Image (cartoon, rainbow, N blue to C red; front, side):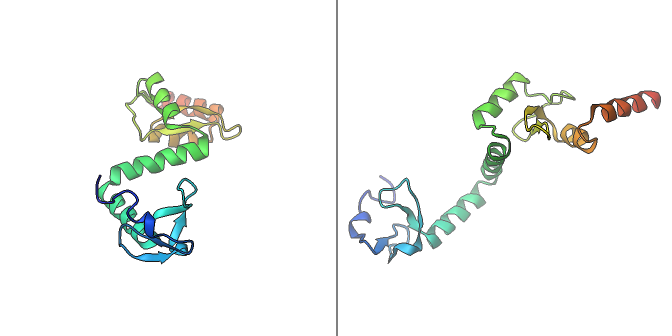
Length: 151
C-alpha cells in the first residue's frame, strides 16, 4: 500500500491536533493547509513537509511543471482547457495558423484583444509579430507590401 498505511495517522487526530504522515509529528491543525476535498478539511501533510515534497517534485519534473503552468495560464486567461487546446492543435495539424511551422504545447493562444475571442494557435514569432503590429490588418498589409517592394 506504499509508504503511508491508510488510517494509521488518522486515528491519532483530535479536534486540535493532527499527525503528519511524512514527519510523524503530531501538530496543531493550523500547521496544515485547508483542503475541502479531505474528510477533516485539512491537507494530508503539514505545511513544511508539503513544501518539501512540492519542491522535490518541481526539481525532479521541470518539464511537467512548465506544462502544468502553461495549462493553468491558458485556462485562466483564455478559458482554454487541456482538451480544447489538444483539439485546436489537431485541427491545425500541429501547424502555426500563420506560417505553418510545426507547433506543439509551447504554442501561443492567439486571441482578439478587444473581444477576448480565441482565434487559433500560433508559434511564438507569429504571435509576437502580429502583437507588435497592434493586431491591425492594415499595418500587416502595409508590412507585407513593404516586404514585396524590397525583395
